[in-house]
Image 1 (cartoon, one colour):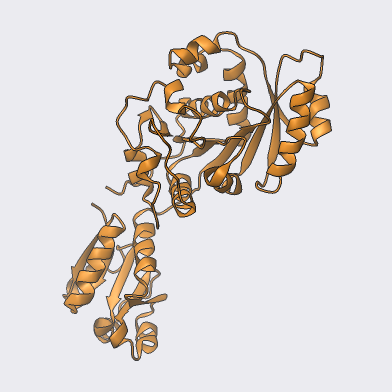
Image 2 (cartoon, rainbow, N blue to C red; image 1 turned 180 degrees about the vertical axis):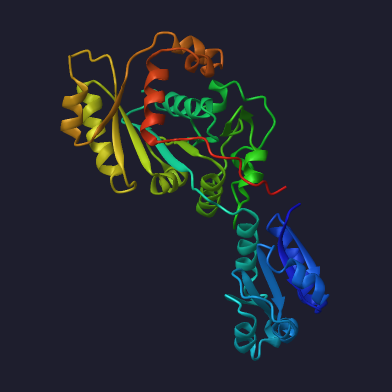
Length: 360
């Protein structure tokens, strides 16, 4: 396990508390007491936690000023801590036990420096049965095919499970119930390692049986880890979003609304768009053809007042492919779904990133 923090303290209580918090942050830390060891690791450690009782010694050592230094004091020993923090050039002050949650987040963040954040996309539809789930899965598969680390999130607990369309239902790995009550920061590396995957595509879906409620804290924690650990996060949002869908919509960089080229579906799309505009930042339209009455995608886009992102033509091969649980096969050759998803990946500017440092 990579050490995210160097702990400088002679106080065994502070040392034990900080090692416990490092374990909660799913990262490593080491206690150093010798001045030579402190000097050797001073610049190289992402985070330096200095016990208040050691502040005078660290100040006297004349170490260079740096970012990521935190003075840590116990509540009963918190006198004169601001002066001590200034002496060692600390950017933050943490008092135990009140600031334990903050310290866990700080250590977790130090173990996973983030250079770029992933893109989050939501896919939803104006009515049931339009193929929004297939579009979400196709978009995720297309990004993974070019080497982008991609997460597909099944936001519909009543949808039957996206993993079935991908043939992953029997693969080992975590599902929604494993994250339902999660609080606090989640390691991006831990999330990637926990989920069932298909190449560069990881999938978070539901177990069979009654769905479990997922808290808002859990969804926020998961989305935060996802954007740190993946190049693209695709969330399949049901027509009635629920807590999962609303959190995803608020976090999305782009939301695609899939509308069939039919009069009633277009009217429903107008109503759905009005609701989505209150939840998401950037809403774009995708029209599914054929159009029984000759309604064109451009006319629908103008009526709903959304930019047209693409058109999804009917593919008669898809139902059989989905029954076989091999949607990936539809993306390996030219076809309406593959063409549209490739276009969307390009429009989003998704590029594979260099491998990030793993928090083992």
